[in-house]
Length: 75
Image (tube, rainbow, N blue to C red; front, top):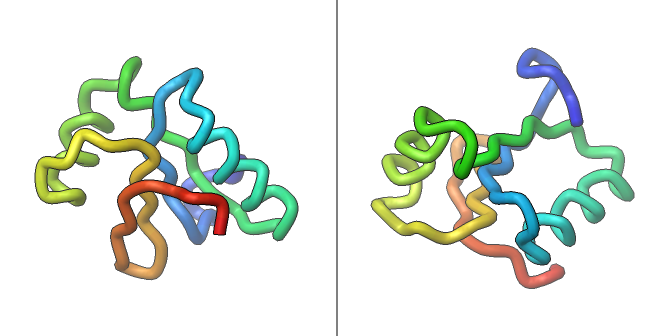
């Protein structure tokens, strides 16, 4: 996981989500810096995820380069 200033990707996730774990493994393999937001523990992160995703309650929600992607399918 990276600091806010060096990250290129934001990951909104919840503990125990296999898709979030898979995404973070992929980012680590590719050496892509990211910032992790746990939406179960951080109400502000949860609200921001809902704003970014159009109220979708799906994790992971990924923000990269101004684009918002909802869900991860191992690609």
